[in-house]
Length: 541
Image 1: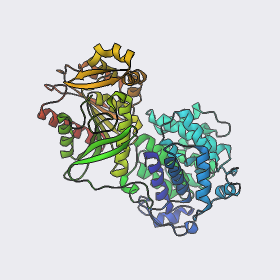
Image 2: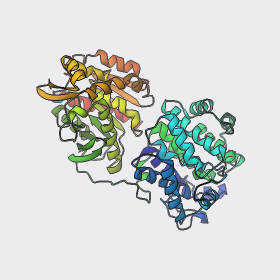
Image 3: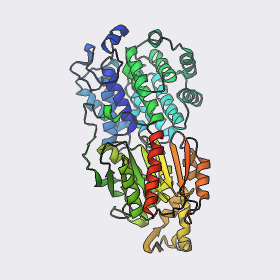
Image 4: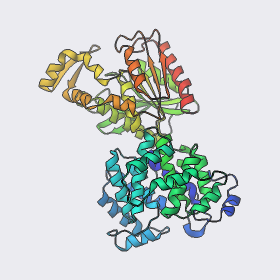
């Protein structure tokens, strides 16, 4: 399960306890320390549900996630409509008016509800790799399945635009303003609600919430959600707790808040996620200290990998990308990942498609298939263990992790070792064979004493990829560029180009005396020390 879905479900489950309690004094008595753990519902509306369950809103959000996964990871409006009718026709939980009205027509016609829960259900869509325009259309479509109000469908567009703006590095308030300016809204009036939320008092948030209104209706819930994000947006846990303490239909607001936090911070606490009472697909495999051989279902076939586990507590988790043609068993790569594990960083290294023991033909692989493999490895970690916080890449692998980081929403930090500023740099290694590859579709070349068949796809994908754009998109992700002044394979000037293209926070460390491949064991240990110290600050704060 991916980050937006996870964050939204955690928010929903946190709000189950005080959901639909409109007496704020009662909520304060029941939750004197705030709402930070799952509890049984206080109100009678949720029947036999228990701590860690979802409200009816969270259930439908989870059904959408299941529908997308069963459809091969693709959202199809007709498939979702069919699946929704099937699930909700047999649903034993609370049926709100929007659901009842829509069920009466077998989802051929939605209700006229203006409740924001319909837009909040878009979280699983945000985990898909779609351009913004397609994402907006999908979000509006899924909202209008049950909620026919124009406010709700336009709110779905506003949420998507906000998420994309936050991913560009804007704060919540600035992202709201951009989403308001860029959208084509006929009834939403987002600027009016943003200005109202911005100027509202922070001295007594419970009074402000009561003044706005505590229902799920658009006129209450939309400005109040903006208010909590703008004024209490430093911490996911604190903001969600304050919103829950406000009472009323806090889960509809909470899901939207979780989406905004996820866009900025990545996924929420795995501790809370693992306490949910549903089959979330989390397998929680036990991994022994040291090297654990793993097999991953990748987009281009089976990938083999090794998960290096620490002896003691895991600080955080990394995915490591090897250098061009090197593979997971290349000695310097093993040394680096083992050294990271010794320092508490669980690190997964894989053979890219067509290399080592992974399936596929090297002639059919490329820089872009490498990115797919990194996403597959990260998804595997999320399902089996925990989502990666850190990407580390060596040489061309460094260029790969810089390009893949924004595709993996849990990642907060990226470290590179001797990375080229442009992936096309590797083409100079077989420059004499380029005419043959263009003419014949492939050529057999010798690299580091080994023979490889380089296919035309490799060249075509290099031309298609825009690394400059990828670097510019990395705002909000901490980066560490490590490079040796003595590197004769990838000259030091590449590090300068990368560093200049990146936004802060960014760091540079000179690997004085090291060669490009880090063949000396002491250099691998030094790199691991630097990554540990740097990431402890950037990830753990």
